[in-house]
Amino acid sequence: MCPCLSFWRTVHSGVFRQRRPGEPPLDKGWIPWLGHVLEFRRDTAKFLQGMMQKHGDVFTIQLGGYYVTFLQDPLSFGAFFKESREKLNFNIFSRELLARVFRYVGFSTDHSILEATSQKHLKGHGLQIMTESVMSNLQNLMLHNLGSGVNPNSWKEDGLFNYCYNIVFRAGYLALYGNAISQTEGDKVKAKAKDRTESEVLFHEICKYDQLFPNLVYGVLTPKERREAYRLTALFCDGLSMERMINKENISGWIWDMYHMRREQGMKELMIDRYMFVLLWASQGNTGPSSFWLIYYLLKHPDAMKVVRNEVLKVLKESGQEVRPGGPLVNITHEMLMKTPVLDSAVEETLRLVAAPLLTRAVLQDMTLRMADGRKFFIRKGDRIAVFPYIAVHIDPEIHPDPFTFKYDRFLTPEGTQKTDFYKRGKRVRFYTMPWGSGLSMCPGRFLATNEIKQFAFLMLLYLDFELINPDEKIPHIDPHRWGFGTMHPDREVQFRYRLRY
Ligand code: HEM
Image (tube, rainbow, N blue to C red; front, top):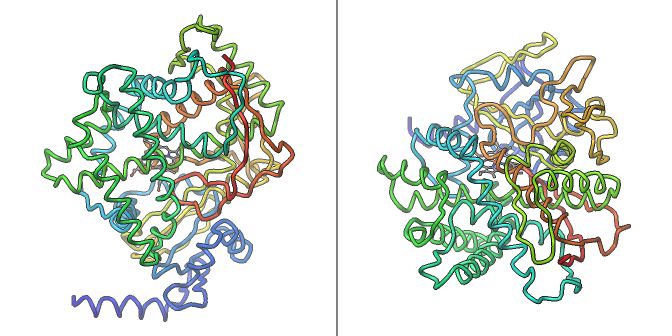
């Protein structure tokens, strides 16, 4: 069909669309085609809360040319996430996003490559190897001054968000994309120093990219921002290209396989470089901010800090290690991280409060959405269905009483094991938190991300004295623009001071 005709049909059907019997309530907004996109962008959570008050837990809204049905009843999520790929498709939406934001155009095999490499390298033995690599990079970034004569008693001041994001981003990046080679740099010490400086530059640039990201997603950049986005994309693609990476060692199997499988299938180098940037963004964009929130909530809740610290000390002692001046650096292994129910609960509680992914599927056939309470809704082919768990689940007071308060033990049973039973309308809620999404597109890096956050917390608690400069300051608001794959950023920095203990 002629593209102009197709365009006008789309516009025409959008403007004149009426709710049909059996369909969810329809709210088109007042701007033709754009619909509610401005309010949605301004504050997704607030806007969707308003829509739920107006229409209930299922409604269709117009957003930038698409009709999106929001499904906000957690008891009905199971059927939605299990729906066949022929009816609901994740890839279409993600392909469009990657093309628009990263100019990456992939193959139809992309998702199976991702599943296979993630199964091999981000679970089981592969996860243990990755966890070891994160540990050695965290040690290099956080503790390289230890015993070097730098006065351990001197306090340093920094923004807590900047500090956490910086260290965790750089450790994750080095663990995935490899380290400088000792032989090339002269010796191990020089190679480690190079890792520190090179990753610092990259972090600086990713912070600039973070600022542009929300506008990139919506395609509403000023010419200046567009030029900056192109510059940054080119810089990252170059820095992460295989041409550069062959000068590194310890490149993770995850990155290595992802590169070679694409190459074997005939993908051009430029496109593979873009994908390497996609993976950097997907893997590092949320892990650092989540680490910040964990440390920050612990600082704001000394009772929680005390219990978590005791658990950390206990696990360290059981491993036969100790932190002592002049002694070897402690090694926080995957096995040790499996013995921390209190810290696990604190991490889960942190993600409940700050993780706000928007989970979207394209509707490929006319279909019926079946709700747990027996209601049915007809959904049209060409529309989208989305779930925003932050409102539907994370802050629902029926599922999580007192939902805006950080309770480190919310996910602990009285016996001290993981709590998994949460209820709504007297029924057990299976999806009681969803920071990693669910179904086919569920985050493949969730186990590694959790390990990274926990390793970082271990090292902070074991090696640093740290405190907030203004302990009575109110918790900063969460930046509502940062929805997407995961975690929301604070809208202002929190100052803290720290010093090495030894
Ligand atoms: C706290 C940290 C993280 C959070 C909150 C997070 C969250 C998410 C969410 C919600 C999705 C699914 C989006 C959707 O269904 O639409 C996702 C996808 C993804 N994540 Fe993560 N993630 C984190 C860390 C990581 C790490 C460390 C890695 C890799 C090592 C990673 C790799 C990916 C990839 C490759 C995808 C795309 C999956 C697909 O296309 O099927 N993430 N992440």
